Amino acid sequence: MALDDNERAVAEFRASRGGLGGPFAGARIVVLTTGRGAAGGTLVQPVAFHYGEKGSLLLAAVPADDGTLPEWYGNVLADPRVSVETGTAVIEADARPLTGWERDTVYAQLAEVTPGLHEKQRLLAGPIPIVALRTRSRARLAAEPWGDELKAVHDGFRRELALIREEIAAGGPKLAAQLRVNCLTACAMLHRHHVTEDDEVFPKIDRLHPELAGAVRGLRDEHRRLAELVGRLQDLAADETSGSAAVLAEVDGLTAEIEAHLDREEERLVPVLNALKTK
Image (cartoon, rainbow, N blue to C red; front, side, top):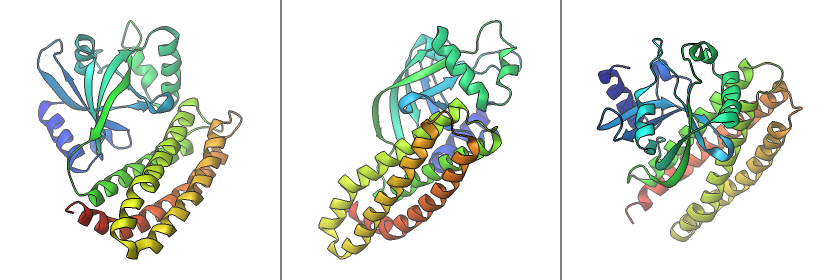
């Protein structure tokens, strides 16, 4: 990617809080910052990622058509300390290149859902490097009204659910191992988000806006309903005998209910949360 194109992509990612079109459309993207690399200085660029076990992030150093590995990979080898922007948060992490059977297992899973990966592998004498990121700290990306931040988080869930649906629909009759990881990761993230709202956000609203008690109570009830749906989807995704058609049907139903819930929650809470920021 040319420097100007890279800068525009980073600006678009940040402005849209995690969305990106062009060659990155339909991919999971973060903005990766690496420093003190082989060429010196820091490099800030959008990079496609995949989910690993327990929500970890995996980066494949896919070569260019001339067989050149991406610059960020050389930087990581020189200094494994990296920073990752997700659209709503900044993650400080340590990068670890995978080796041996661990790398081969992850590569096989990624190849199931990454068209053209095997062709890219043929450009290299050795294996395509795959890097796992271990989180050291996580922080909000910027100080902004809480309601706007909630909307950005919700938009991230919308993008993720749409991606999962597309991946399952494009797959074969058996749910690929990487799709199971994606599905289970999305379920876990949604569950944590709702727990945070129930334990931290809603009590604050209850104290400062008692007139919204009925609306908040309704949202809590919806969380319990969605938790049941997410639990069913997790069970299906974890069952290696489950077919993609069964999981897709659950994803369709879950997506419809989640998106309706997110819309209602934003309508009721965004103005309130934005006002709370100034109190």
